[in-house]
Image (cartoon, rainbow, N blue to C red):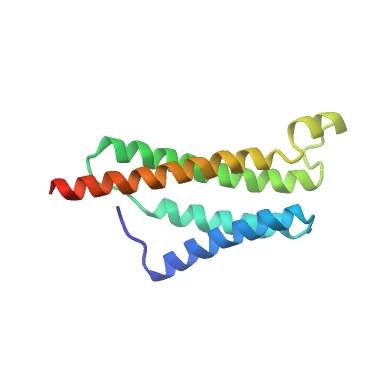
Length: 133
């Protein structure tokens, strides 16, 4: 896997921290929460997309694709956070409540679970690959 340099690592960690702060701030109904979360999600996802795997291990390639899916879900969560503040899609009130309001929590949960799984599995696969060499 391509390692991030110091600046990219700082952006990656800051993005993760901002996502946690943004998600927590949304529970307190702070108006800036979606902005904080969105900036964090953009930083986190973009830096994670910078890490590439150029090897031939099919399992790691598959896990990287799953990890990229979780990055997209983080970004979808940010969009749904903005949509949850106001009815920006012009939907009726009932439809808005059924399909949009606070659904960012579901996409965030799915993204976090996928992220944990793939991070753990990629680490194990890279260790096994290093032992074979």
